[in-house]
Image 1 (cartoon, rainbow, N blue to C red):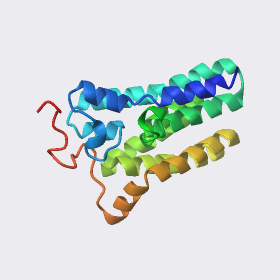
Image 2: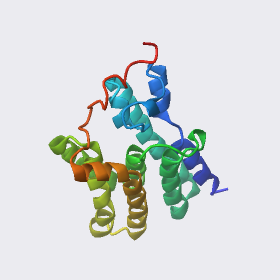
Image 3: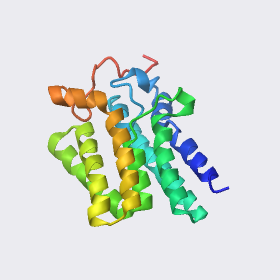
Image 4: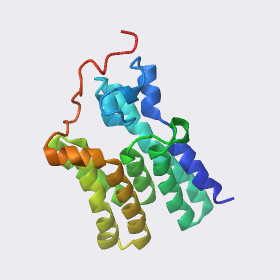
Length: 204
């Protein structure tokens, strides 16, 4: 019975809010815009800040809700596994042929639910880096690289550190193209459209 929480975590994580909101907003398939990602940063490239904010909130909440529900299991392993599978659901959703997002917002929601202090620190690191460099991927990679160290050194939670390390590895893998562009100095700034024609509403 407890393992059903893990499946529920995956299914919640796999809800592609960015894709849904972009379609409802008249922008067609968000995967055909900008980077092709279904996350909030790419939704922002449509120029619609409200849709991007809604995507960010919902992608964060689905990770948090999955973990909150798993608290009913009373099993630390189930809780951590549910958080991991919520992130995997976002990255590899069954509804989109296992081609999803990069898991940043969903992971932050997961961490905020499991260990609020770690989640808040990660959010703080992301926000600081984003304000300084205006590059979402760099901000995310910095926060995720720091997460396992923070969990172990400051919080003394080795299980959480392991979870943070596993998710960080997944996030770095999903950001491999971003990393290449960062090294070349070609990574776009937050809110910058890759092509001004890419983000036109589908009806136009």
